[in-house]
Image (cartoon, rainbow, N blue to C red; front, side, top):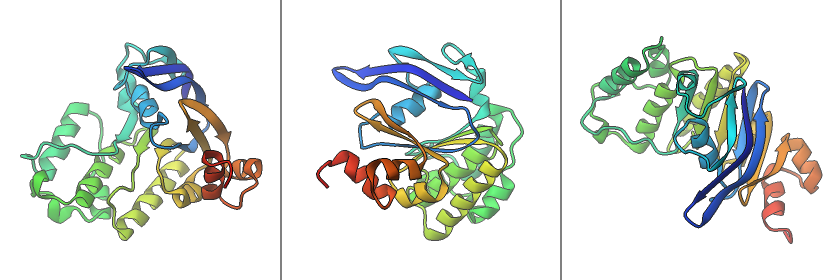
Length: 234
C-alpha cells in the first residue's frame, strides 16, 4: 500500500532523512521505531503530505502522492499532539471533521467505547490531556480508512482506555488494514506489531520481525535489542 523510495529531508543544516526506502505492502501493523530525532514523525508527515521531501518518492497503491491529495481520504491519522480549537465542543469538532471529509463516519460506537458521551457538550479547552487523546482516537478511526497512521497513540491514556485502544488496533488489523505506529513503549510493539522498521541517523537500520531483531542482536527482548543497537557496549 505504501512504498517509500530514497527519501531525503533536511531542515536547515539538520539532515533528518538520508535515503530512506521501505515498503508497507503487506496488511498488518508496522512499528516505526528509533531514537528521538531519527526521522520517524518526518516519514509519517511526508506520507500525509504535511512535509515535502527534498528528494525521493512516496507511492500509495502504486501511485505517486506528490502533488496529489485525494489519497488522504483513505488515511486515518492520529498525531502525537492534538491541537484543537479551544472554543469548540467535542460534538462540534466531530461534526466539523465529518463535514470536511464528507465520507461516511461511524463515530457513535467509538464514543461509547471510550466513554466520551458525557464530554460531547464540553469545550475542548476544558478537557484533560487524556480525554483530548480519546477524542483524537475517535476522529482517527471513525472513517474506516484502509491505512492508519498512529504517532504515539497511547499518550495520556488511562489503563482502561489503553486496553480499549489496543483491542481496537487488533480489530482493525483483523479487517485487513495497514497500520503504521510510532511509540516508545516496547511492550506495546512486542504485543501488537507484525513488523518493525528501525531508524537510526536518518537511515533504515533494520526492517523485519521483532524475533528477527532479537536473533540479530542476541538479546532476550525488544527493549534489550534496541539498547544493544544504541549502546553497543551494553
